[in-house]
Length: 166
Image (cartoon, rainbow, N blue to C red; front, side, top):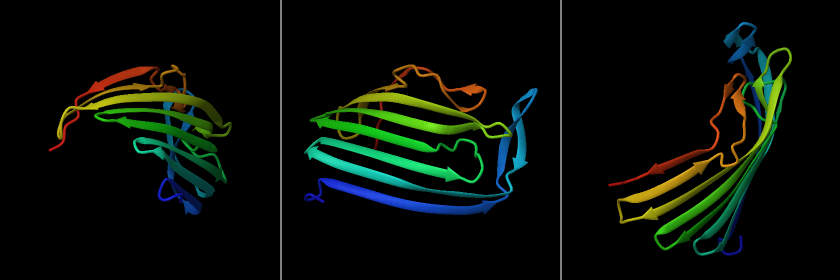
């Protein structure tokens, strides 16, 4: 739409499945135990939107909703992602916000869920056709969260790199 400046996608899905193996918590054993999930149905919708404000400045976002017939490990009810990318000559700057709500971290008899926001940013510089420099910050707000109960994810992290391609 808008002469290629605006794009969107919508996907609806339904998955009927059975016999998936999932780790469930067991008291006294932090690693849990593998169990067969039996039959389950997952259904939901995903929406993606992209907008080019002008040459070199893009925004995008996604949202997904998941309805599970039974709690499934690492399956959030809601998830959203917003990102802005600005290319200025040889420089690229980007920032993104990631939102997760109702993520099952321990699905057993009494399911445990997590909700959190994460902020990430990246700066890159293209030295030439095959060499770049990058600096990335992940979880910049130092949010405490877990994807699997008992296994916390890292806090604020800064990474540097020298990507190359031939």
